[in-house]
Length: 85
Image (cartoon, rainbow, N blue to C red; front, side, top):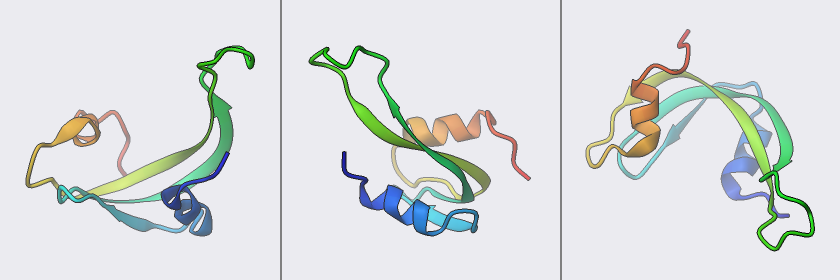
């Protein structure tokens, strides 16, 4: 299991406030709280079984909204399902 570039960046800057920007123009400020390995809950011998790395990222502020299709990430943030400081 290989970590992708975003995950590697989050590890390098754990606990430090960073800005993540999407091509759509969505920009958020936040920091990584923790990392862990997980899976999709299937048995290891199941052909659909998958392992992955996960992180808890605390969003501190939405700096800019996307200029195009908002997508599920921005919609989730706008529903205020997270607690901004």
